[in-house]
Length: 101
Image (cartoon, rainbow, N blue to C red; front, side, top):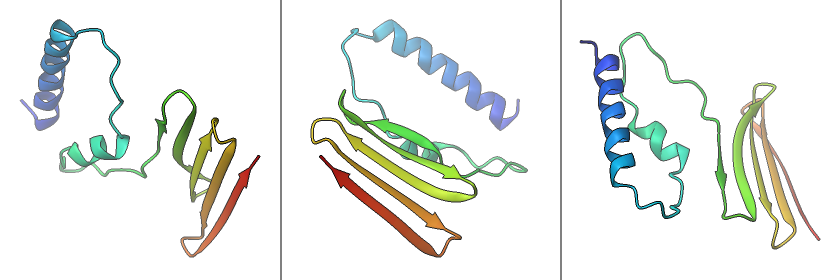
């Protein structure tokens, strides 16, 4: 059995255990960066650019994406009515915007 098949099998078994033992109470989601760090190195496979979103409670989010080949970061806080936006242009320059109100 390949490493990938073993990993998927273990993931399925763990998901089954989690659903059996779940209390139904809400939990904080795991940051996608921490999950990516746990991915195994598979020969012949290459990890791509990180992209993901993290909810900051029910009142905002943080998001990292790739827009037009440039790494972007967005943050929105509904309570504070504030936003941040950052773009790494050509892997050399940082364009940053912060707004509130």
